Amino acid sequence: MKDPEGLSILITGGGSGIGAATARYFVERGARVTICGTREEKVRGVAESLGERCLGVLADVTRAEDRQNLMTRAVAHGKGRLDALINNAANMLRGAITDLNEAELQEVFHTNVISGMMLTGMAVPHLEQTQGSVIFLGSVHTRRSFPGASPYAATKGALEALTKVLAAELGSRKVRVNCVVPGAVPTELNIRAGLFTEEEHAARMDAIAPFHVLQRVGTPEEIAEAIDYLIRADWTTGASLVVDGGLSLGLAPF
Amino acid sequence: MNNLLLTGGIFHPFDEAAPALASLLGEVGFTSEITEDLESGLNRLNRESFDLLTVYALRWTMQTGEKYEPYREQWALSLSESSRRAVLEFVSGGGALLALHTALICFDDWDDWSRLLGAEWIWGTSGHPPFGLVQARRGDVPHAITAGVEDFELKDEVYCHMRLETDVEPLFTAQTVGQEQPHPVLWTRDFGSGRVVVDALGHDAPALQEPTHVQLLQRSALWATHQLKEAS
Image (cartoon, rainbow over the protein chains, first blue to last red):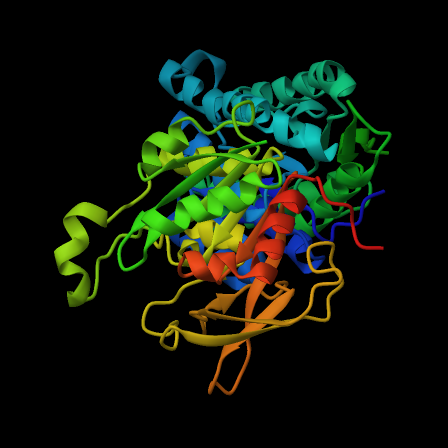
C-alpha cells in the first residue's frame, strides 16, 4: 500500500464537511491536496488553514472550463502528478416524485454525477502514470430508503453503478475506481440546500443516531479514513465500502 | 532530440546568446528551434515534436517599474491559458524543461511556473549584484549532472533572495566576488513524469560558453531527457 506522503490528491468540493476533513487528513499525512468549490470564502479558508500543501481553486464543477482549469492546477500543484481524484462535490435535492422540478433535477445530476464523470475522464491520463485511483462518494440512501429524497438517492445510486463499470473499463490501465458509502454524517449538505436549519439538522442527527448499530452518527474524519484505505488498497477496485456505523444493516426494533 | 528554445527580451544579448546555447546543446545531439514568439512556439509544443523545452527569455507582465515603461508595448507578456497548459502537460507527461537565467523572472502572473521551477522572483526583494566575476561551487548533493565537476569561475550575474521551495537542493551555488553569501544557481526538479533543470546563471554568450558551464548545460539537457546515467 502507498503511503500518503507525497501523493497528489484532487478533492472536488472541500470547503466544508467530508471534503474539508479529507483534505486535512491527507495534508497532515504529507500529501499535496487540491480542493475546489464555488464558495470562495469557504474554499480559501480551508486552503489557508492547511498551508502550502493545500491549493484552493474557485471552480464550479458543472462548467467545462472550470474543470479544465481545476485539473491543470491540481496536477501542477501535485508537481506534475495526480494520484487520486475524489469526486466529493455534491448537492442535496429532496422532493416528492409528484412535485419534482426538471431543471433542479438536471442540476443535481450535473453536479453529483456528470461532473464527476467528466473529471474522471480528464484524470485518467494522469492516474495511469501513477497507477492511481478514483473515489466516488456514495450514500446510505442507496441502502436505506428515505421517502422524499429520490433525486439525491438516484444520483448516489448512479455513482455506485459508475464505480463498477469504470473499475472494469479502467482496470487494464491500472486505474482503480472505488466508492465510499457513508452513513449519517453531520455536514452542511442539507443546511446549505436550505432544507433544514442548523437546529433542525442537529435534531435529525440525534433522531437517526439510534438507527445505527453503533448508536451514533459518523464524523467526516471517519469517512476520510475509509477514503485513505481505498486510495492505498492496490488490489481493491469496483468496491463500495460501507462506512455507516451499521445504519444500512437495518436494526430490528426488538 | 529536438529542443524548442524560447528566447528574447530586454537588457540581455539574447540574439547572440541563444544561438550560442543552441550550438553547445547541438554538440550533444540537440537540434534547436529558436523563437522569440513564445505563444506561437508553445502552440506547437508537444512530445511528438519536442523532447526538450528551453526557456531563455525575459518576458513578464512588466506592470511595475518606470524603467521598464519604454519596453512594455513590445515585451510585456501574460502567457495565454493554452500556452500555460501546453507547458504543464508537456513536462508532466515526460518532457524536459531547461530554465535558464531570466526564465526565473518570466511569467510572474503564473503561479504554476514558480512551482515548476521551485523558485519565485519576488519583485522588490529578489535581485542581483552587478555583472562581474562569479565563483561557482559544487554543492554536497551527489548528482549525475555534477559528478566529477570542479568549482569554476565566470563573469555573470548571481540572482539572490528569490523565494525557493523548501525541497530545492542546490547542485551548485555561486557568489559574485565581494558578496558575503553563496546563492543556489543550479538545481533539478521532478514534475510528474518530466524533469526540470534550473540554471540561474548565463547572462550572455561568454557566460554560457565557460567550459565547465558548457559541461553543466550539456549534462543538464541530457539528464532532463533521461540520457544521462544516474550517479552511483
